[in-house]
Figure (cartoon, helix red, strand yellow):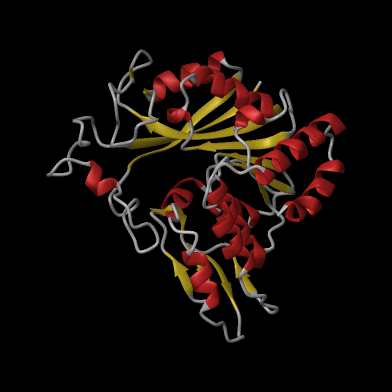
Length: 320
């Protein structure tokens, strides 16, 4: 598995990044993959290893589903391997007619923000909590110089490599959390944090971690659950929120903008606020567990705990 990272390390070595930082990333990645704590990892690795080699591939990154197609005859092994990696949370993907209909129709979120995010062409991009890399593949279509994702979930890592085997985007996902990144990297032109903020117990610290990843003048794209209200309004759920255990802090947009100002950002702009629908997040054959509909009340007007429906805001801010 570690051999998949060799080309990426070579790319990092050509950037303005210290050897200590590169070695730190290498060591943490090696540690995570050589001593996995998730018991299904051997099965996921076998699924990846069983994917067929396909020579002539047409790649389409500007469609709702990240798509690969070919004139070759593809046997059932590809679908069987991809099914071993269920549940798929982000998508969709269309791999040679194997349509992976993920829980999230992530294309809907991307379509809402793609025209309003900073220009990614020839930029260094970091995606924090990237999952299986759906957004990274969409970013690759915008001709970024380097795209690096981080996510501690090994299932999501294997899903990414299973798609990347065919897409060949030259993006890379490291099996790390942002807390395991070298401090004060100041490397990236654009950092994305989408769907991470509300899972963090220390939201101000998370914003500082994101700022540390950016060059001066670089841009943060942050997407999170929010509530209505002024700069004093936030929600700390008593227990769960929409059945999620690990939701700690939902600010108003005004409060989040103030927090960004206090943590070293300027030119702060909210580019989207959308209430999540049961069409955007739902149970599918590729994610068979309960999803948003089951986490709402009977008339779908509140969460099952009685909170307002999930609303997500996306904000772009520039590091001072």
